[in-house]
Amino acid sequence: MTKLVLTLALFAFALPAAHSQQEGATPTQALVSIDSKNAVTPTAKDITIKVDNRATPLLNLASVPPNGAQVALLIDDGLRTRIGSELDNLKNFIIGLPQGTEVFVGYMQNGRVVSGSDNPGFTTDRAAAAGGLRLSMGLSGASASPYFCLSDFVKNWPPSAEGQQSAQSHQFTHKARIVLMITNGVDPYNGSTSITNQDSPYVSSAVTDAQRAGVPVYSIYYSDAGFRGGRGSFSGQSYLQQMAQGTGGTAYYQGTGSPVSLAPFLKQFHDAIAETYVATFSVEGNKNMVNLKLSTTLPKTKLNAPQQVRPGTVVLTQR
Image 1: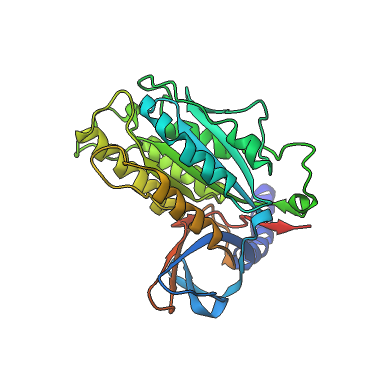
Image 2 (image 1 turned 135 degrees about the horizontal axis):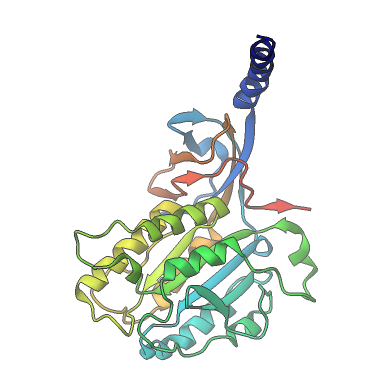
């Protein structure tokens, strides 16, 4: 009897604390890119946000400055070697990033990402980063799965390179993290690339991992040495679209073969980085993940945002 009374007393004592935690608000951030046909400078009042389908005040909306961004270019090491004709376009893209932007060039192989240079971290030295570009190995399935590679990368995000010259690069304790994947997007571990088999648990896990890390994932489809269009092309692009929609990125290329040139898609990605904002809002209660939906009153304007976020996520903080 004494044990029962004590148990009930402890339970009653825990209820107010749990209720208080549930009622508390957790400041949360998400990266949002603005795609508009008009020249716009959005403010918080222009955007409506719903968390778990509940209207939530947008506390702040701030653009990401160049020195507050980290851009990771992840290249599938299984791409056809004709990707070599695009190295100049990739180099020009990296060199053309705004001064202060940190960049990383890596190759997806065997379920992980390997730095393209001797420097394993992000750097503001764009020329040095571009020097890490090389021809892909061109071996079928060299990445194992691009989604294994992506999950590992966002969970073990590389640090900034030591000894960077720009003092501006150290103004932020956490920078906005953005990924561009160049891959065929096929998940060989999910079996058949048939239209009836497009529900990969590994792709879903990679989406969740990127959402938890607050990382939007952009992509450009490019043929792999082991696939020649057809169902493989459909399957890979379908997964890349799923990844983009889930994380707030964009899958730029929709076609039956490799794009004629990466240049126009790299230009779109460059513009998307420049139009990326940090949305700050509060999440009520104690949840692992919440659904997120944003809309805007701005004409001819589209918002790209993650479909889910982890409460308490921080995507950009300044010292």
